[in-house]
Amino acid sequence: MKILIVEDQQRLGQFLKQGLSECAYTVCWVGTCREARDELADTNYDVIILDLSLPDGDGLQLLAEWRRSGFNEAVLILSARDTVEDRIKGLDIGADDYLPKPFSFDELLAHVRSLLRRQSTVKQTVITHRCVRIDLLGHTVKLKEQPVNLTSREFALLEIFMQNAGRTLTRSYISERIWPGLADTNLLDVYMSRLRNKLEAGLGEPLFKTLRGVGYQLV
Image 1 (cartoon, rainbow, N blue to C red):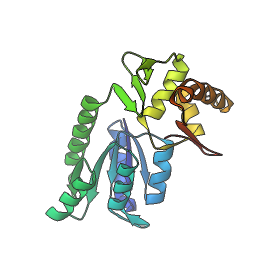
Image 2: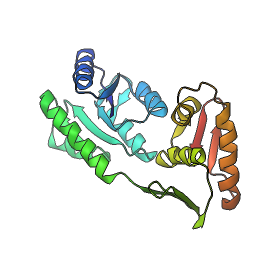
Image 3: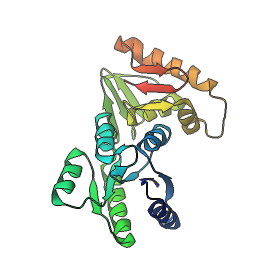
Image 4: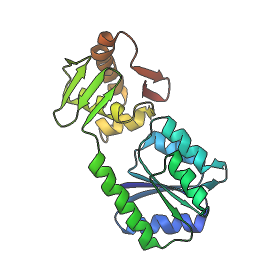
C-alpha cells in the first residue's frame, strides 16, 4: 500500500515516513503543494496524509483542487488546526478523516488502517465515463452499450485512464504500469492510436487529450 505524506515540518515528516515504512507501507514524503501535485501526477497512492499549513499554499485549497479534478483517493488531514469548525470544513471539502496535532502514532496507524479497509470495500469493479463502461471483473468494455473488442494490453491501458479520469498521466507513468522495466515509451503511441481508433470513432468526438511532451488525459 502506498502512502503520500504532505508535511512541511522536517522532523515530523521524517518521523512519519520512518514509522509508516517500518509498518511495511511504501511511503513518499513531500513538503509543498507543488511537490504534492507533481507526485500525484506521476504515481497513484492509496492514502494521502495532508497537513494544511504549507509554505506555498493552503492544504484545504489543494484538497478542493484535487476533488474538483476527480481525484478520489482517501485523504487524512493531519493538522494543528483542531477546532470543530476546522474539522467540519475539512470534511466538507472532501477529506475522509481528520486527526488533530499533537497525535499518537498508534492512533494515526489506526486511522490509516481504517481508511485502507474502507477503500478496499468500496473499490469499483464497474467504471463509467461518458459513454464508455469498463467491467474490471468481467474484463469487458462497452461503448454506447455496444461491446468493444480490446486486447489485454489495450484493456489495461484503458483501465488506467478510467481510474484516473480527468487527471494528466505522464508517459513514463503509463508505460511503467503497462510495460514494467521497459524504458522505450514508443509502444505507448502505438497502443494509444489503437485505443483511439476503437473508441473515438464510435463516440464521434475526442476521448483522450494529448499533452505534448507530458502525457495523456481522459477527458
